[in-house]
Length: 245
Image: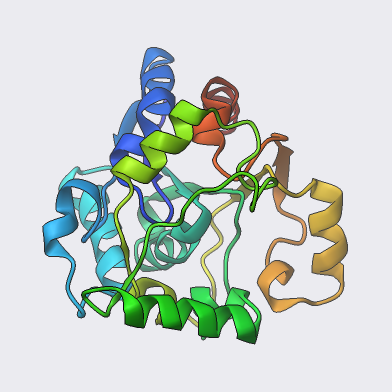
């Protein structure tokens, strides 16, 4: 059985992994869902100084303080950045990295770079309009406006996401990831929900920097929306169990 660290994407805390955590623990794994600084029950810690390095340190601390080794480190969506950074810092403790509907980013890129310039400007406008001026507001999670990412979510799911979601520290999206010249060789897996493995391979083959590092990775497909921990928690847990063994 594996030590599995589960890191949620933007706006959410450890609570997002509740059902997945339960199933993985029932399967015998040692599971550690993480709430990063400034989010969920740690929302009071959100300041303008919270950035990508803060969240990398959070994950490293969970692993080191817990004495965890041979860790299966799982990151959903925007957690790809701190998960990749943490795995780069403590490669001797990582058995495998699993990206859920996301993938590793190259050195020098920030999460915001994934978006087109117009979308980046809109995001900066939203941050500036937020009362604190350094947080990304929780989205409306409107399935009519975003049917692909919000596929298979019930009204109850969406209400919970809106209610329990907390603004995301902007630095975690704006700070570039600093990676070593020689990347650690930990095995990496991807569980894709809104893309097929074939689509990922096709884009990766073009040299797109966001997808290039995904070429040749262990790829799995769980067709649903962008939040499979809500829409398909049992299937996601089963895949993680399979990958971790």
